[in-house]
Amino acid sequence: MNRTVPVVISMSVTNNPEWKKAGFALCAAVLFFLLCILSYTSIDGMSGGYALSFIAFFLTLSGIAVSLLFAHRARVMDAILSDPRLLAHWTYPEAVAQESAHREFQEYRERNRAMFIVIGGMLVLVALFFIIFIGEGGPETGVFLLLFAAFLFVVSRVTPWLEHKRAVAASRDAFISHAGIIYQGRVYPFRTFLVSRPEVSFRKAQKGAPAAIVFSFVQLVGTIMQPFDVAIPVPAGKEEDAKRIILALGGDGEL
Image 1 (tube, helix red, strand yellow):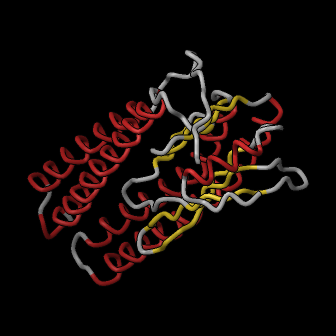
Image 2 (cartoon, helix red, strand yellow; image 1 turned 180 degrees about the horizontal axis):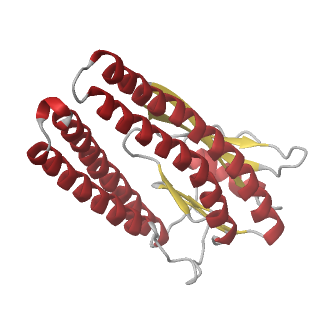
Image 3 (cartoon, one colour; image 1 turned 135 degrees about the vertical axis):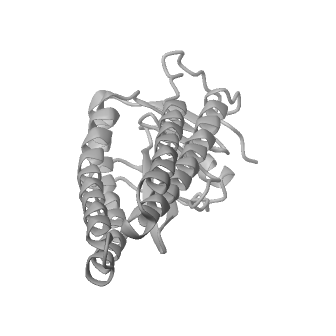
């Protein structure tokens, strides 16, 4: 019979940054919407006005979608932190947390690189189409798209560094529940838009890496299904607890 592990949540681990991210994305959507209106009313359509307004409108919808995504993550994070029947709440020593943050940084950087190749590549192709085949206003629109692609390239390189800095300063706690997990201050809902419910397995201790419960997600990036793992280290002596957690989440529980 599966049973939960009794936990007591530290009052120091109650910050939920996902609400701020949702608000920032919503503000960005408003700014893009204003840009859409401005480009449609102030720039001649055949001189790039239609193209810029379309792009701004697309970014507006993207901002709204991202805001809703972060709002969902924020609600899940609140639910996990207030869950009286968590499957686990583990706190790690400083050295373990630092090593895990470094591994997560490497994986996050690779995911960002793949996302930029898909999104940036599409922007470059559209930009070249405007520059080569569209007459009046086409080159200007193409240059705008190329500049936007360059901006995304910078973002794809800077965000992993910022995420690593955040993870190093984040709480040393891991929370596991039926709704999702919180690790290094980030929440990973089990049910969310564009991300599949993860497969859960146990990874034995390896050279340079402790034993861990591995949550294997699949994320849709453009038209590409991109897998990524979140490995939560298992504290020494908690292997049996890890087995019960995996069984409770639908894994085979084989250690």
